[in-house]
Length: 333
Figure 1 (cartoon, rainbow, N blue to C red):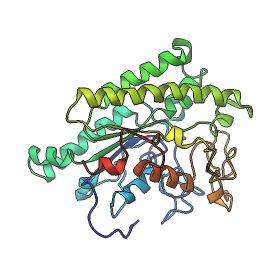
Figure 2: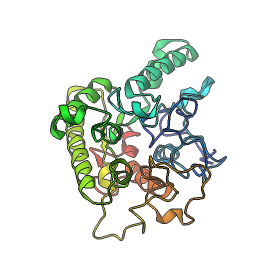
Figure 3: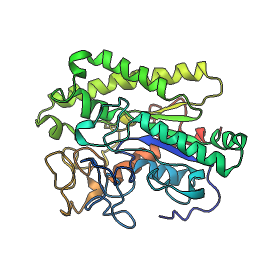
Figure 4: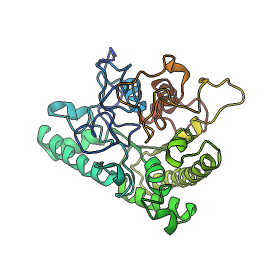
């Protein structure tokens, strides 16, 4: 778990809020179907399965490396002592912006709950640094990554048998409702807001179809959310003079580029053998050429895909990758 990076990190701490795309063990000890602390998850990660929903590192793991951290950011479930000074990962599989999202899978830590966990961490940091001014100064220099929204569609809006949201709201209305709640929840300095990832691989398991209709429906719904999120970043940067917020277009990063050959040859199926809910079967061997697959299971990218997303988030490859700046420039502010 050591990156062998020489020198200090570019920022003193990195706090992570999110769902299964960033979860690194917070769901391991709770009653839920949304956990990944078994093989073949973690097959390429040092030490094996940790609760990460991929074969190796997550996107935020790799971003932490790029920021110069010598070890991975620990999950809130196990973070102790002085290690919390470098940041904490609060992400939880199946969690969403809305508190009810993912409840059919079991216990999960919604964004509201993750923010509560962060307040607990802040109180611990204040005790370590002995006075609140020291904690405030330390935390003001951190980067906060918030990647939420996918489950509010996959495990809420597009599951009408479990949730009423699609009967209450049109897709446009739902995007607005999510953005309003998101903006009320997150108003911290130096926040990285990541858009929801593309959902085409998840669709087969969630909706039970191999056609493109539900793929287009989900992606169109997510595009509405991401469009409003980018506008919100503009508004908050104007309204909050001390804030530095950026938008990371992970959705757009999944779109093929006509001028560049696609990095993956397998886009429509996951690398591992699947359970009915789209996660990997326990102890079943995955595909051998994992670097050729975009997805590890029906929902979560492979480490190879996470590496591309992380590098384009840290240092934008296209102008559309991040807005208004990328993470490397955010770290310099």
